[in-house]
Amino acid sequence: MKRFGMFLFSVMFLVLAVFSMEKESIAADNAEKIEVRTIPVADVQESENKDWTLQYKIKKGDLYVECIVPDFSLSKDEKSGHGFLLVKMNGQKAAEMGQAAFMMKNLPSGTHVMEITPTLYDGKAEKESITFEVEIS
Image (cartoon, rainbow, N blue to C red; front, side):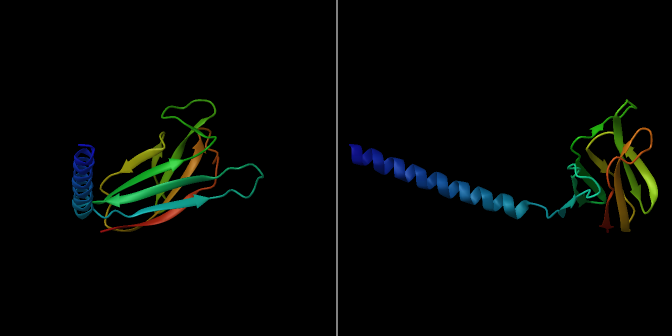
């Protein structure tokens, strides 16, 4: 009886393992290819750690951005000691974002130079800018 139970358990385990592998294969085939990049920046001007990073991806003409800015408080409204992310596209101000993750919809086709700078509400750049290029087709 114990052998039959072990046999039954083994068969069920194999069936679940095969089903799981097949499901992952189907999901991988249906996944869209999205370009994701991580760009680290180090502020070497001061001895304090002022590193921050951003990740972005492009999907159907939309730019998705996520920033990690340690020791910097973002706010949609002007508050003392808080700031925003100044977003420039091709050297022109495009937005002031009060949150770390945002989307820019329907960018025009072509190559664009994006620049993002953590900025205090008094206008002072709090950290070094990150600049990157995006290609919208």
